[in-house]
Structures are given as C-alpha cells and as structure tokens.
Image (cartoon, rainbow, N blue to C red; front, side):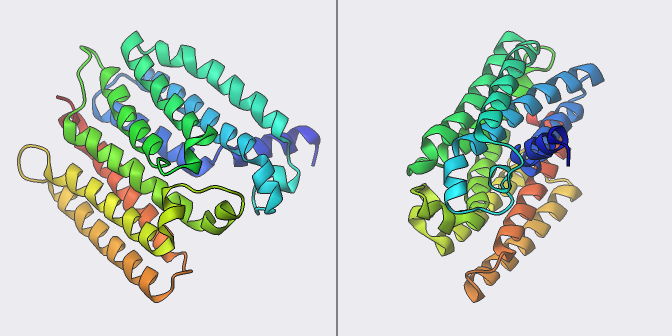
Length: 280
C-alpha cells in the first residue's frame, strides 16, 4: 500500500470512527429536527466533526506508547500505519479548523462547543487516569446539546431534561466504552472510575446510566410520551436486561458492551426525534 494511502487509512482508524460518526450525526440530527437551514446544519456538523477528529487523534497520539506496550490490536500506531508525530500534527490541525468553524455559528454557541472539545481533551491528557474520568464525557455531551440549540435563531437554550439526558448518555457511554480495554488499560497505568469499580459494577453502571438517559428523554418532556418514546423505552429496557444477564452469566462476554452501545443508540435516536421539544 502506498505511503499516503496507508497514512489516510491510519487517520481514519485513529479518529475512532464509530463515536465520531455517532456524535456528529447526533448534532446534525438535532439541528435538522429543530428546523435549522441546510447550510446552518452543515456548518454545525462540520464544527462538531472537526472537534471529534481532534479528540480521536489526540487520544491515539497521547496513548501511542501505551498501545505499543501492550500491542493493542487495531491501533494504527501498533500496526505501523502511521506514527505518533503524524497523529499529533493531525490533532492540532483539526483544532485549528474547529475553532473558526465553531465561532462561525455565533460567539456564544461557538464558545460552548469549544469548551466541550476542551473537556474531551482534558480526558485524553489527564482525567482518564483519575476517578473523575467520567466527568469530561458528562460535560461534553451536555454541552453538545446546548451548542446545537444555542446555534439556532434567537439563541434559545436546551431544556433541562435534554441537557441532563445527554450528560447521562455521556456518563454511560464512557463506562461502556472502557469495558473492552479494562485489562490493557490497567496494565499500562490507567485507573479511571471504571477500572476502580471492576468489570461487573462498571457494566451495571453503564446500563443504569444509559437507561436513566432514556427515561429522562422519554418521560421528562411535557405531555404524554409519543409512541416512538414508548417503543424506544421498551427496547432499551430489553437491551439493558440482556446486557445485565449476560454480565452475570459470563463476565468476559462482549454482549454487555454491545447491549450498552445499543441502548446508547436508542437514546440518541430519541433525542433527535424530540425535535423542537428540546428547546426551552
């Protein structure tokens, strides 16, 4: 494979494409649901995408030595697609793009988004190794919803339940996201909250937080839940139950992780479907 194609492939893998696509899609979906013009939605999505790219690339840049130490499979640095210096340059370039794109949505929403990105960087730099590892996720997800709403005409703010639900979504996503790498992380000195709690309690914490997020989005808005809300809530209950049972019967199973991620996707869809109700 030519060197340039190898580098591009490495950058795609290192940006953590799954979370990057989900978070960017959440922002774009929320904006579209609020009735934003296509151009405004594209600008907002581009700002979020550049921020997510910077977060993903900085994560793999700062973790390069740890990933090499445990030969973590699938990591571009480990398989030789690119080196830490290239990831650092890409992360800095993404930040340089993120700043003007964010501020182009308005000074206030732009500043909120940049704080959310800075919070995610704080996780990569130091907080992932502390008991406060959950905090950047909760802060950044909550601020993401505020950013999207503030970027709308008239500068409305997000309803409390939308912000709280997004924060709980971030908390649960952090716990679930760490599950596959708990042992490798612990072997290289990472000791965030999930590592301190252990696999069984972290699994239950992830599922519980994600279910709380779904409950907020379904039950907290004024008026009775829509049929989609009941359907999504029911699906989340079933998925969380499957994950909890799998965790008890086989602690090493990947099914609890998959179930938690599925509940997170349900919550994202319900937030998008809430539309103008998330404005206050």
